[in-house]
Image 1: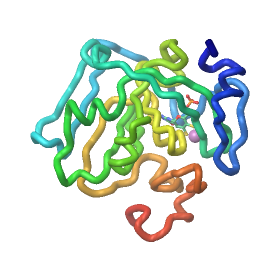
Image 2: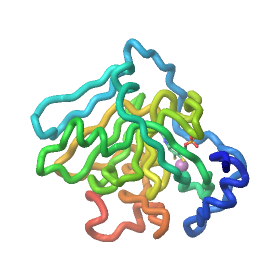
Image 3: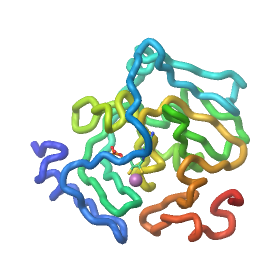
Image 4: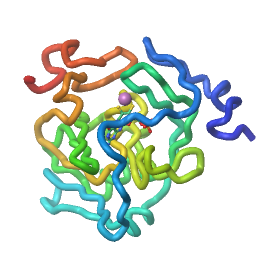
Length: 210
Ligand SMILES: Nc1nc2c(c(=O)[nH]1)N[C@H]1C(S)=C(S)[C@@H](COP(=O)(O)O)O[C@H]1N2
Ligand SMILES: [Mo]
C-alpha cells in the first residue's frame, strides 16, 4: 500500500501543479495573526444566515465529531506560490453540512467564518463541490494547532486562503460579499488553474465592487 503523504504517494498521485506554483518540501505554516487556543467547551460550529428553515444550526464539538467522516485526496496551493501535494484530508464533507442544514433557495454564496473574524467568501457551487471538506485530519492524523486544529476547510480547486483554518461556521448569503483577503487585494474567486491571484485581475461579474 502506498502511504498517503509519502514521497511515493506524491510521485504517483499525478498531481500536476497550477501555473506559477512550485512544490514545497514539507508543509509550511501560513496565516495571518496568532494561533487560537482550542477550548472544547466553548467551541461550536454554526450554520446561519439564509437557511432553508430560517433557523441557525449549531453543533458542539462532540456533536460535530460524530458527523459522518469522509476523505479527500487533494493538494494545497498558496497564492504566494508554494504548493503542498499528496495530502489525504479526513473530516466532514461540505456536502454533508449542506444536507444537514440546507440553504434557502435564494442562496448564491457562502461566507466561511473562523476564529478572530477571519473569513473567506465562496460561490455556493464551489463550496458544494464534492471535494470540499471540513478537515479534522491529514494523512490519518489529527491536524496540529498551527494547521487549523480542530477544524479547517479545504476547497481543493481554489487557492488555499479560501479554506479557513480554525473554522467556526458558515453563513449562507443571497448576494456576494468579500471575505478577509478578498477585501485586501486578493481575487474574489481564486481559481489557481487560471491564476486568479489578485483583485485587479477580476473581470466584471467576478466579484462585488471594491
Ligand atoms: N483562519 C485562517 N485560515 C487561513 C489563513 C489565515 O490567515 N487564517 N491563511 C490561509 C492561507 S493564505 C493558506 S496558504 C493556508 C495555509 O495553510 P497551512 O498553514 O496549513 O499550510 O491557510 C489558509 N487559511
Ligand atoms: Mo496562502
